[in-house]
Length: 260
Length: 280
Image (cartoon, rainbow over all chains, first blue to last red; front, side, top):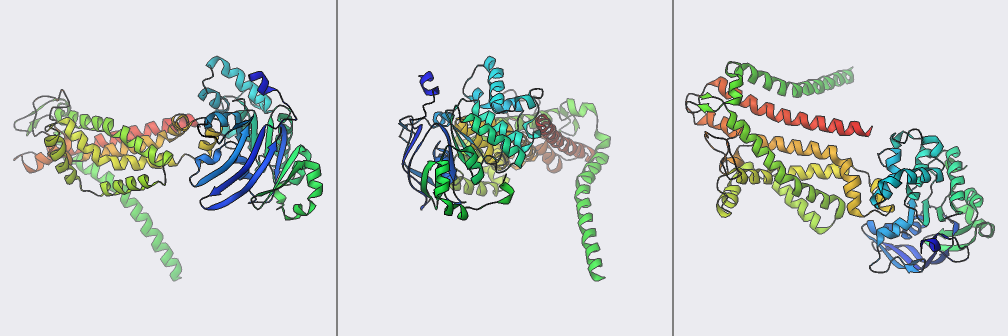
């Protein structure tokens, strides 16, 4: 079973979203969305308040924790609806990781941040060192921190913290990695590093990245979903989508501080 | 010109007030120390009272207060923490949470003597615990619960929600998140709040008056069903009932009580420091 799920099949969708709607109290904040998400990279574009983040967080049931949020519709992860009754939600979140906009390492050591997930999932202590090293290597952080794994994570720079958060997410071996504007809180250099890392991770995982930055979307390539006003406006290969929706770019807020 | 005067006056007033606050505990301590000096000795701390409470030591009262504080901590911490966890982690805005908050608000406004009478009626008589360490500690528990819950709630709420979200996003359950992330992070606040509440419990007289405090014991309590002497009640007795109790002796008992509460607070401060120190 494990071997099958690790294989990346570029033609079969990893996630199929059907008639997804999200309400906050009485207000519909995400329209009916039906779309397939394939292994590799998917960027989610759209202006502020267009429903990008709401859509992303619906993919691993993060809305569950918020009072007043209601999700309708189906989200199939490998043919299993994650909103079906009786679903093991923590297990879904283990398989579908999430990296936040603002780096949010735990107030623990670098090592303990990465080991946090595996420890909760009952990984034997003797495997932890190996998992921590592997995760930090995957996140391109190992060389920088290998001699100070016991140092507090808060001493790291913003970009390092974000890569640590990615390592932390990778440590539980997710199949899908959701990222909510992962570079928007970083300086241009750190952002470029994280962007390169995302492209690398997308070779083995299904990566879904929300971004404000059209140029970043172009560089990441892959497929794109374009949101506007709480609806999915278009989806398809990123380059084609960007060239056919020029007008939309003008409406997208372009924050100079975020430009790379 | 006038503005500068007003400014100087305001600054002066604020400074003087702040210094006055600082002076209160110092003055209190100094006053008691000077007054108690003639009565202070090691034997006061480690021997039994004699001569109708006018002489001898106050060991049973010190020991009794320690027992009351310890048992109250044991009784109040689990339900207090559980309630705070429910309020913060599970249902911050639910109707039940609102009801609980209203109840706590009411509870915290009730005079301590009312708790004493309630304890007498329910724990001593109705439940048949008799006048005992257990009944007195239960009564004190009711008194400090709102305080413990309020402090624990604040401590839990001070843990940023981004960390909780990150933990949940790693596939951890809510209970794992609380156990392994929220509680360790909230620990310093929890310790401080508990110590504060226990300090309050140590000083109270009215709740234990009818529920377990003894006038005079020749032996230390052995079980929770025994009555106990307590510093606060002993001071009350010396001041109101015992004719001819010397002033230094009263001051010495008061000083003991004050130092006990201070010691409790310092333990809290040290624990808090150590916890915070580990994180840096």
